[in-house]
Length: 88
Image: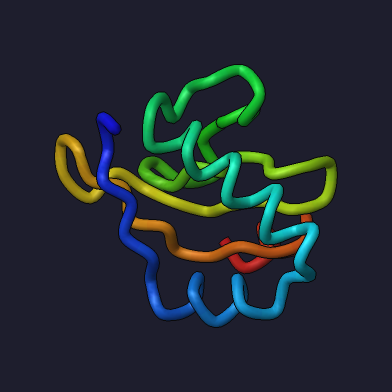
């Protein structure tokens, strides 16, 4: 793995609320995120109106919100359905 992924408390709380299928999908995408945050299947993009926050797609509905904490460290801030972006 190139990047270390660190979950924020809010991320961990909302991850726990996902279904088993959503968790399995998320775990696969987290492996990709750790290897290459810009992997095409993640559809990573900066969140509009922010300079340091990014979103990556788990599927067509679930998003991971994160930012680079250090050179090789990604802080995962939140996860949830597409409306999770409304708080940022």
